[in-house]
Amino acid sequence: MHIVLDDTAMVAAGQGNVLVSRLIHRAHTEAGWFLYAPACALVEADRTRPGTAEHLAALPGLTVLELDLPASLAVAHDEGWAIPHTEHAARPTPERPDGAVVATTEPERWKDRTVRVLGLGA
Image (cartoon, rainbow, N blue to C red; front, side, top):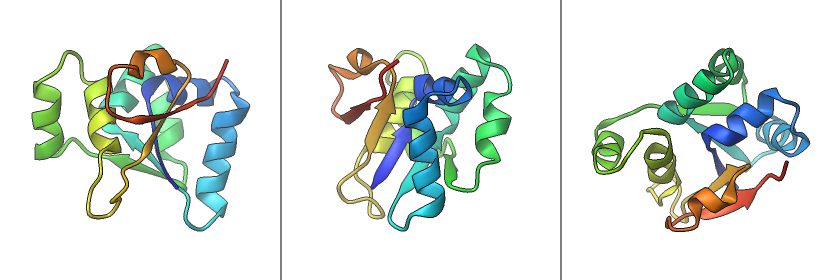
């Protein structure tokens, strides 16, 4: 299971959201569970809730995805940085042929995007 946290999920992690905590726990303890934090979404989450970036980056079960050239090109064609970087991270890759699921507390913001969504509720 490959899951990409969007900025809202990252903020929720610091606010005690039980569902985000379970995802973090599974990624740390269970084989086959992978959790990703796109760098641009991590920055946006830290702007919303200072300290979020340092906290999440220190988690052993979470992989921070850099803004590489393909991601930069994806971000360049959209408004903002967090959503397009997260969407890019969720697309299929050789390592993730089926792509990844975007975990979010605001599923409606993804309705016109081509990603699978896991709503984390409030």
